[in-house]
Image 1 (cartoon, one colour):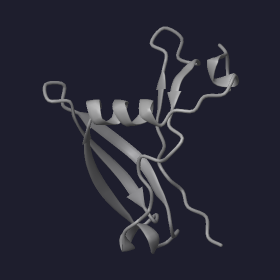
Image 2 (image 1 turned 135 degrees about the vertical axis):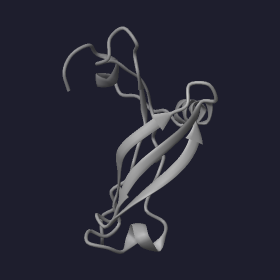
Image 3 (image 1 turned 180 degrees about the vertical axis):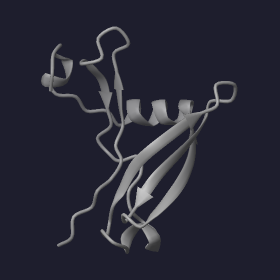
Image 4 (image 1 turned 45 degrees about the vertical axis):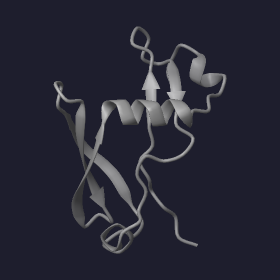
Length: 100
């Protein structure tokens, strides 16, 4: 059975960044296409950099795929925040102040 490396999401507290307010139980991006599933390291997606247009809220997420190519995915701040909040599951440790 092959393992998959995926991109998740969380929203941290503005005042205390060690406190997780929302942690997405499902994934924001997972290997699905051929170039993400086949390559130097198969079934891998990992974030590289994200750019956000402050006026429109549009996000461009550049990500590595299968350790062979760079992909780009588009979304918006509102879509991401709504999705993370709707699929959030927290533990007691997420609410604690301190290092993880």
